[in-house]
Length: 106
Image (cartoon, rainbow, N blue to C red; front, side, top):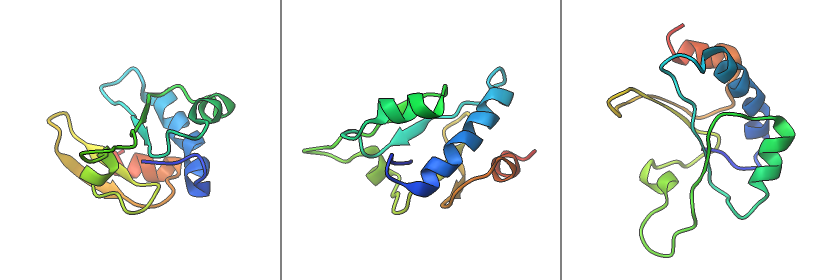
């Protein structure tokens, strides 16, 4: 979970892109959920050259947004989710490539 105005998010996106490029042909997926869809998310993604999926967590008038369901209190927040949908890890800080590889067990 991230936002365009979040400086730590801006710092980790290139690291996530590096990991995605190295592993995109494996059974691993990065999905970045933006929590501020009213800002220029497309421009942000294009500026950084991000090619992994970017989803928008829509502002809800009823029901809960995805970041509320996941109880995301800080951004960036990263969840490692296995192929069965089980949350294996949660990380609430800026990730470097080394951190990503560590969380992925490499």
